[in-house]
Amino acid sequence: MDLLERLITFFAEHGYVAVFMALLLCGAGLPLPEDITLVAGGVIAGLGYVNVHIMVAVTMVGVLAGDAGMFLLGHHFGTHILQWKPISWLMPPRRYAKVQDQFTRYGNRLMFFARFLPGMRTAIYTTAGATHRVSFWRFLLLDGTAALISVPIWVYLGYFGANRREWLGMWIQRGQNSLWLVGVLVVLIVLVLWWRRRKRRYAE
Image (cartoon, rainbow, N blue to C red; front, side):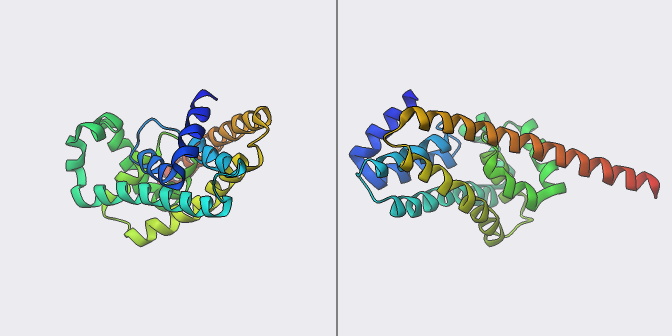
């Protein structure tokens, strides 16, 4: 909760712009949890510093702008982006190859579920752009659909828990655990689909 409190203080002083910029940094893969950032934006709305509905709109734009930026970087620079130090640290060639393989098999589904997989978004979105197999607008539709689910949940959670920090901490923990559960389920679904496809090939 220390990070949450620091973000709340900072966002309360600087408002929407600070939240928007923080989400751009999240999209770039910096070690700043997106869910905590969204909750902090909701908390300052609950404390009366900003309007919660405007905050939801600002955070949606910030999340999509950060994701789109990584997609467009991958699309423009392709595999050359792996030579950039910040990107190579976040996504070494081995990890890139693994994500590319998964994207080739389950592209659209993977882009949608990436929003619920902390630590994987930057790699998946950059790979999606670098493969040139998906148009920007299709990517934005899939990512935006997922964001319409996740972003309002975190912001309104912060809004309603602004004056109940223990309750808020409990639900943040539950929400983060749920995201990991979703991640595990996605991996299991991918493995089952891969196994069924492989079995079908051998049957032929």
